[in-house]
Image 1 (cartoon, rainbow, N blue to C red):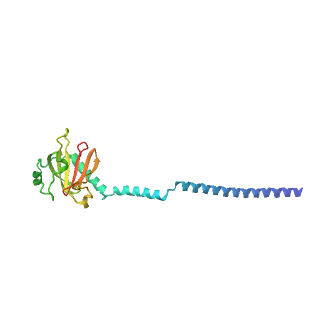
Image 2: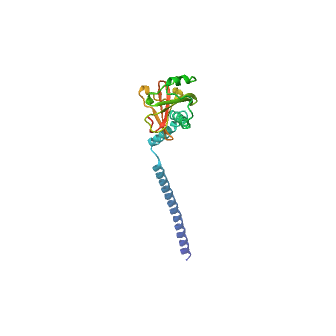
Image 3: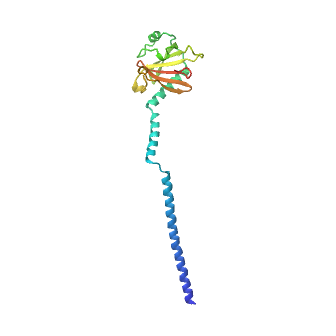
Length: 207
């Protein structure tokens, strides 16, 4: 009887030990499986180095376009300034359709006014002093004889400084003006006869 109880106790202990070892192996297997799943998930969300580089260049390049002092930023600043000025439509200081009369009036400018070839067929109404990016400029106003509306076209003229105003296309070299649409208005920037010119007009009147 005593031997049977002893043998039964020994057998129970061995089974308990075996169960503990089985549990340890099972825990190890579960841990390995967990690590495998985690590694697989991480690998699935990793981007290829080339894709990362492309994304970085796209976002970095887009940011540079709008940095203060960048060409696009300067053009946008000019557009905002002239559109705001155009909408205010302050009274003309001189009313005349004679470019010579306007030149004689604007004695404080460091340049001579030019009647742009882009609006040669429009009626000149007159002009007033203004500024572009802190530089003294002139605002000339035109009206298209073919237009049924009374909307006027503003032409801003200032001496062109590439350092201050950036790279603006020169139409005397056959280049096309840059265009920006803002507040429902068409803003075009170009260089003509050494002057930076900016036009602001209703989109239907812009050319």
